[in-house]
Image (cartoon, rainbow, N blue to C red; front, top):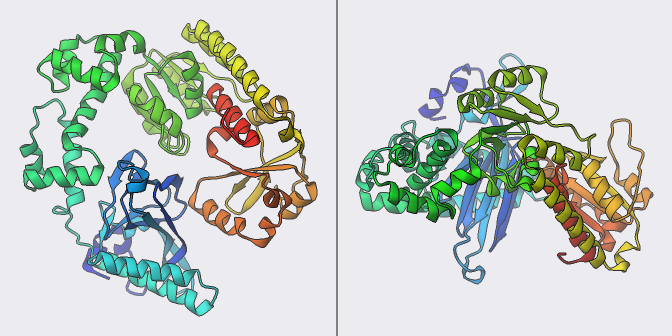
Length: 554
């Protein structure tokens, strides 16, 4: 182990009698000209490598242009996804190939034969990126590891584990403890500086000097790393800050422009309209409010039908991808929605700083949280799933004085659903029985909620298949087969452990022998909208269901 490893506090605690061991848990290689891997939760630490083509790594709200020869570390409990190059036409794109290696790092306990798993942060560089000397050699090793661990021969599998351990050792041993001159770390310093000094007149030469790079090279490497220029990023930061000022204060337009680094308010107005399609005055007139949402991204599924955008709300590119993309740019204060609001204390502090006039919170928020929320502003708590979503929408509309928008949306929704049902061919209703289930880790179980039941059993008039679950609430393949469903819908949780097991299960003889799989009446469901109960989720579930059972979009 190199001297660099001794700088980490976890590894410093290891005694001379301790030993380290790495184990490759599972590995996948994905390829395609339009490769798109939605963000998943990493149960175990992962390494991500670009083996071919062009792609970006998505980690929470950060996007990084991947470079061949670099290995990107994702700690356990984080989220990541991969986006292929979308700038070229499909026929012009090179095949994108990405390898993902999930692993564990263990330390032996002195005086015993037991091994304890360590946090992978003990071996990841500060910037999360390893650099390997030869990109070609890295690809060879990676493909060799994959080939061997996929083999059924125990000796070859062992060889794959040994090759992985050697690869991980090399990455750790060759990582420098001094990240000051690391390009990625330098660019992150520049982005952080822009986040803090967006109100100043920043030049390209000044930013390049901060990165200790020549201006020409800085421009190239920033664009290659992030997919946008430094000036574009600075503009994004300024516009986001401008929204916060316009919606959260009574500042004049001239004051807002100066506060975000623009000396000319008319130039700022033109930039703002070009970015958002509205002038600053139009934006303030249509968006200004000081109402916050707290506790669940599902709340945004009630905001959209009302044509209303909250001042603050929980957002995350994995757990609320649709709302993050559609509403995110217009919500000034983003609360952390990691694993549906894990970071509650930090969110409460951020909400207090935003000083909202009203807080709308999801049902199920703990008593201590509600007490803290009431100290910040008046509180309106949404009902739970036992209350019909239509009633919840109308009640919220009353609170926000947007009842006309709610009534109009509901009328349009009913017309849309009726129109879709009229287009459903009669032959799709022959196999009436349907079973909905979920897969989490290694457990299959029956799954449903009021939204699923309304779409499948009320709208489409399917007959639900009720399967008695085992004592541990699991559902076996044998039970699925014996229940004889005409259709099987399965929701696969998007975490690394579940996804790895699903790849094994779907290729197993037992699964492939299921009648629904052989007849083509099995469908895999996405987490969104099928885990959410809200007006927008209902609309999207109905659309997806009609598409599944008619074979085309409504």
